[in-house]
Length: 288
Image (cartoon, rainbow, N blue to C red):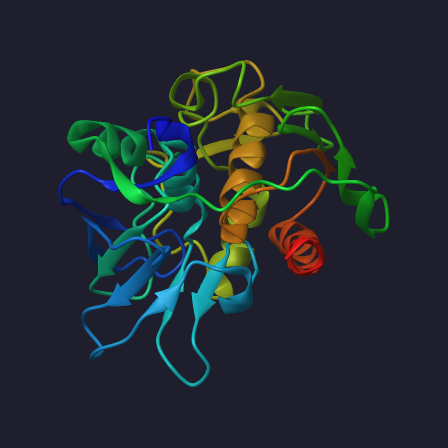
């Protein structure tokens, strides 16, 4: 196979890092390792005995303020979206992700460090074809009130995201990105997670964002950002787009489509991914 874009890829070598998880506040170590063809991207909880948690839509177990994967009555891995976005964007089809705790480290709140780790070891072509993309033929939309995420037929894969917050520092902003036209590592990966100052105490009282800080998240109040400068004028919108990419990466290979989201959530992202999974299965069966 001469065209490397048509074959599967894995990491060229193992690479590790350690950090604190956003919600549980626990320190964990993650090691990214090469994996065999057709094994996909999957997690292994090294602290809880032999197990394998596929990075797939079917394995999603929770979507409250992050995406969590797990097998029934088994171990879980939380806040997987930033790492999975980096792996997908780098073209890594197969990866074994070993983690010694329940939550992926937040690092600086973006995918920049994950992208850097992957680039530091590179990726390697494998001797098996990549599953071909299908072209989306009909629109799909999932909504909750005025929040929505939809997939439209398109000539190339594209993501667009809009947010609207009643805080002047954020307000209404959008970002659109196509893998064919912009380097993920430069224009999406560095965008950090963000929070409203007035919500922090309430979330912590619910056992959430225990590991959040001004070092790994942008925080704003009615007066403005507490820890500027921003990396982009629309960094919050870019971060939401980053989350969308990570959640949709659970499909494995994405259809050719334009995904547009507005005021959406991990829950809506995953609902769309489930509908796309059913579509991909039907298309594959029809062409077999």
